[in-house]
Length: 87
Image (tube, rainbow, N blue to C red; front, side, top):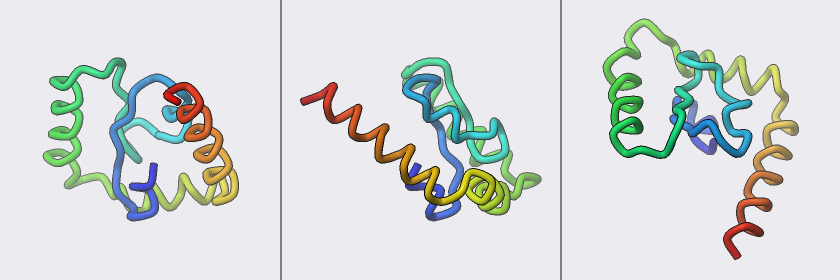
């Protein structure tokens, strides 16, 4: 989700709560599983179909609606939980 700081769309999987921060086809794409072909399709879709979508403005709107603090707290909790699971 650091991509939002650069106003770039994201591709996230439908796990772990990151999907809650993505407005489908406005700020990124949510995919169902961690399959490399599906990830490649989603990235290609963003790169090829972004002509009519103002991702930067949509991301600004999303972050504003959530509030920066909400985003940072959510991401901190997400990474802390992920860290605990892995280590």
